[in-house]
Every structure is written in C-alpha cells, then in structure tokens.
Image (cartoon, rainbow, N blue to C red):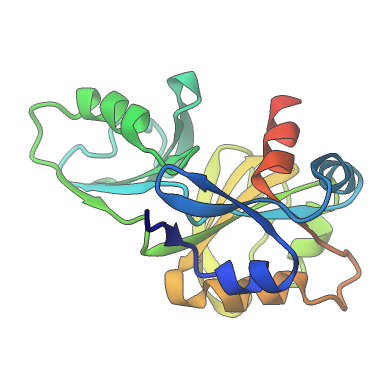
Length: 217
C-alpha cells in the first residue's frame, strides 16, 4: 500500500527516524527514545513535523463565525483540532491527526446552510509544532514578530515572516506554538530550526514524544 510522505521525509530518514503508518501517511514515530525526546522538550525545546496532520480551508460569507474574535484560534471539542480565523470569510481547520473526519463533521454542522467552499489544503502547508519553556528565546532567532505572551497570547494566530519566509504562527500556550509554511519550503525551514548554532538547541520529536507532552497538559 502506498503512503504519502511529508516534505521532510528524506531529512528524517537521514537522521535515524523510525517511521510508522498513520491514516495513509508515513510519519515519524521517534528518532531515539520517546521518553528522552519528551524530557528534552520539557526542559528546553522540541519540534515535531506535523505536516501530515489534516488541514481544511473553508471560505465564504460567515465561514469564520465560529471564532468570536477578529483574529484568533479555538479548540474544537473532543480534541479534534483547532479552528483558526484568518479573515472574516476564511477559516483554516487544523486537525490533530492526519484524519480530519471528526474536525470536519463538527465545523460542517456550524456552517450548514451557508455558501462555503471547502478545500483540503493538507499538502499546501508544511507544519511544525514547537514545544518547550525556551520557546520565546528561540523564536527571536527566526522572526522579528513580537512573540512575547503579552503581545501574542495563547489562542491567537498571525501571518508573518519566519526564517525568512511567509508563515502562519498559531500560539496555543506560552510554551507551545505551531508554524505553517509553504509545502516546498518545509525542509528549508526545518533545517533553519534544527541546524544548530542557536543559543537554544532544538530536539527533533517523533509523534510518540509529542503525544506524551500533550497528554501531560
């Protein structure tokens, strides 16, 4: 059975990743020991490739009515994912797995009867999940955007420059951030984050370590 691969697949393979199949995708289960990866993120900073996590764009009048604020993010019930309001008529749904069924079902009910155009944009964006207490210090190397919690609080999103390219930043908590860039720029941005030379070293995470970190929240 063929599997889809993220734009970072070759980098992962070259760095000893152990892969697993998930919802039609080949994703990284772990690079080393999941517990050790999670421990490094708890004290420093870790980054996971979440490019395979489903992404759905909904455009049309009232498409973003799920988000009460002008620009923001809300968690969809049952852990299905996030809904990110980009404009008044553009809602970007970010699933927590490569399967968007639960997320899409919930939001479809809210948009029922409205002229909304839906597009699967999973392979449009590469995605990364940064987690750890040294997040803010690390981001200073990659963006001029004001990422202090007071200026960019939890449950907010912003389109800005990151590692020299256009990106969508989604702030979940003070020490948890998702980054989305164009699919073909994914490997470049990943290497910028993990190449070393930063004051804050970054530990690549597999999805097992990511699950451990999120289960403790």
